[in-house]
Length: 99
Image (cartoon, rainbow, N blue to C red; front, top):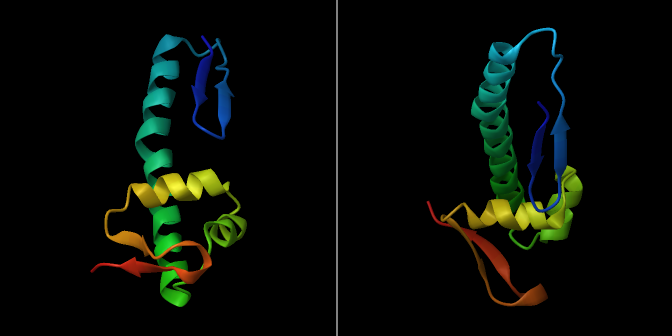
């Protein structure tokens, strides 16, 4: 049975080898959802915080370029981090990290 996953900028199709059976399929789905997504998300968030600490005026486009992900993904990840906010507007603004 194929597994389709999509978010705003990615689409993933997983095809399992049917020689292993349904138990293997379920085990693989659960292990992917539990470890890979959380680890990648935590790593990206830590790298975003690090970039903001180095340069409070860094743009989301520059972050996306350095991380190798889309601008919308950077914005979506920042929205999940309540301790980070953008103060000001456009080029005159800057990022703040509330500790």
